[in-house]
Length: 291
View 1 (cartoon, one colour):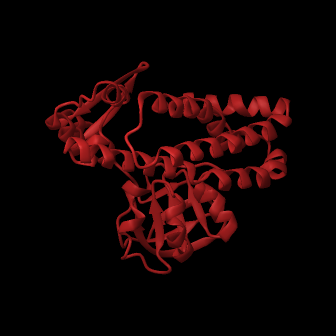
View 2: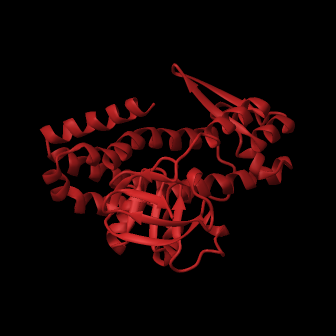
């Protein structure tokens, strides 16, 4: 929930405000562990890993994620003078670590392809395994029925209620997807300025940068969140708009480097606007509006 997420980030901010040395300590830990994770997945690439190797990776990530998350988000809740003082260090830390999660994703896709060779089940269905199912496969060699995995691939929702996680598929998942996608929306939405400026252009909704051949110089890039693969598109864009993000999200860090008009944290830009909508992005006042 949003209030729980903000409470987490504010708690981290309170710790930093009381002791500024924690910023350097956390950044140092994140950098060191980033290297450890990268070295581990490099050493495991190209094979089906053992349960012990998976446990080692999981433990590293369990240690890493709280610090990575805190470093990324506490900056949104500290005073402006502290933001100004520490933002260069935090930007540098963010750029150092920005490839680790895409690289972990690539590692698991490659791992799924290795399992595909052995089990004769498409790798995209292997990627639908839940954590406990994957752990069980490494232990016993048994996979859920292919029909179950196909249903998840077609439609699935991971629903969290009162601390309990439920995986929904089929009509139940479609119903929730429709509730999310069909919310009433306006033609103007607000966001947080990552880099100021004003730009006009045609919208291009890009969720997969590999499928962006239609993106032209001067278009408005709208996406859920950017990753390193988006950088060539960001260079061509007149402005960048994201659903998610904070001052240390990838889009914000790159926007400051490129000095590119950027609006982040709009929550629903990918749902409100459509390809070729003519819009104005006002990152001075913090809104994007259809013209």
